[in-house]
Length: 81
Image (cartoon, rainbow, N blue to C red; front, side):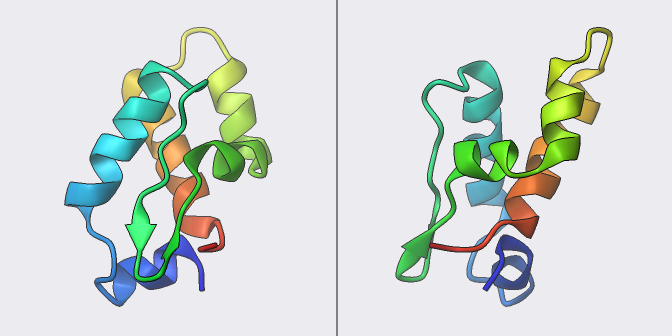
């Protein structure tokens, strides 16, 4: 199951995802791992596995909204572990 599938199945919500994403953006060395049922989503691993998110986060001049959407996309496409 991916983060997106868990989101569609309401196993995880914006109320859980958004704080985890904001925490990751504030300090990537301390990634969050929101719980999804019996598993979790590792924000740090999700971002590192998603080339677009890595690229967006490395660029200068990228808006906070673009950074947030890149991380959220990576998390929603990641597998729940």
